[in-house]
Each structure stands twice: as structure tokens, then as C-alpha cells.
Length: 282
Image 1: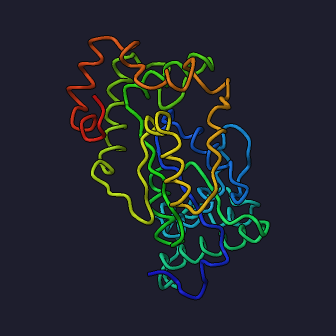
Image 2: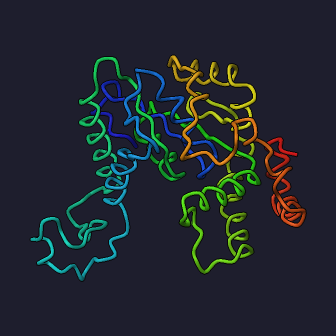
Image 3: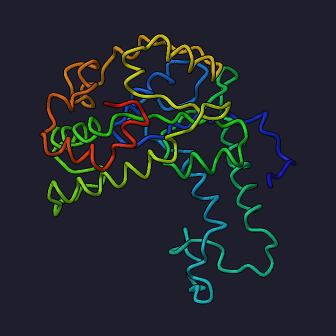
């Protein structure tokens, strides 16, 4: 149950972009940042995660007390403490969950006080747990669930890793292509399945990357109306060269038809067929 002593009205309204990497999150963030009513650090790659940090601090209060009963007391004297985690002592705390919620509400209220009179919203790329946890405490939060054809995500990840010259997105040096593909399909499937049949609501909107690129005006209009923000679709033509891996936005869609091997196409169809069909992908 939320603590009703603190109103959300004085807080910035969080807009949480929930998506896996290489699904168009940077494009979405640049679009949302086109509104002067949005508070955000407008620097590529839009990954200063203030709210995720505050949520982590809050959630930790109600987390597992792994050090309970064996907390090195002298560590509490260090600045900052050498080890920190869930509350190791619970006897005097009636409801650690309520304490965690109050912590997040208060942190967000104090953070919001730094906004200008023009700024009403805040945007952030977030992991799934944040998109579920924060709206349960800050009621005016909205979640943009952004999806992209996982076959194009797979190709974009490989191209981006090669472009940067180091591995990311969960790939390790020891991985073979087969090992990483297996983990990728499992991870992406778990992320996309829960939103497969989700209807748009006042708090959550599902957007396909492909629709944002192919039907920009319509998607941007619906998104702006939903958030009550004036968004400038022209920023989508300003491609960040160090970030892109396709010659154009149009060619970033259905690149799997041109670049994916027959065997990997069959693998995706076999293991993710229901997800591909459910989201309207061939």
C-alpha cells in the first residue's frame, strides 16, 4: 500500500522506456527529449539512470539481508560502509516494504525540486524490474514498451559489437555464436513474452520500432497525445553515427531478410515463432 502522506503532484512524471538493447531505445529517447518539458541529460547514449539508482536504493531496504547475524559492525563506521544491503536488523522495523516506498517517493520528490517550471516529465531507459516497481509507487509514471523484430536485434547487436571493438549485450569472449544465440533467444523471449498480448492502457503503451520508422507521424502523434507532450519527429532524421549500424533508418528494418543465414532464420522461426507471429513479424 502506498504512503498517502506524500502527493505525486509535485513530482516529475517518469516516462520509462522498457526495451532490450538495440531495439531503438536511443531513437525513442531522442524523440522524447525533443520536448522542452522533459528533464533529461541530452547526451548520447542517454544512460544516466537517476531513477533506476533511486529505485535500487529503495528496493534494497526491503531486500534480502544476506549479512544478517554476521554484519561486521566496524564496517558501519566506514565512509561509505564497506558492505551494504538489505536491513540486517528487522526487530524495530514494522514494515520494511513501506519504508522502501517512502524512501523512493521522498528521493523522487527531492530530485523533482531541481526541475524548472517548464519541466514536467523525466525520461529514462530502464530494465523490466524498474518499469514494474516504480509505477507501483509513483502513480503518474508511464511505461513505453518498445519492441523490435528479434532477428534484427540479433544482427544489430553483432554489428554494434564489431563497430565498437568490444563485446556487450551479454556476450562473453568464450562464447561461440551458437552459445550466445541460445542465450539471446532465451533472454529476448522472456522479455517479450509477458507483453505479447498486452493492451495499451493509460499507464503503458506498446510501440514497435518498425512502426516508428515506417509510420512516424502517426506513432509520434499517438505517443505525444498519450504523454501530453509536444514531440518533434524531425529529430529522428538526425542519426547518431557512432550508434547506428545500418545505412539508413529504413534499412534497419527487416535487415534479417538480407543478412541472416538460412539456418539462423530457421532457428528463430522454430524457437520464437509464436512471439514473431504475435507481434506481427513475418
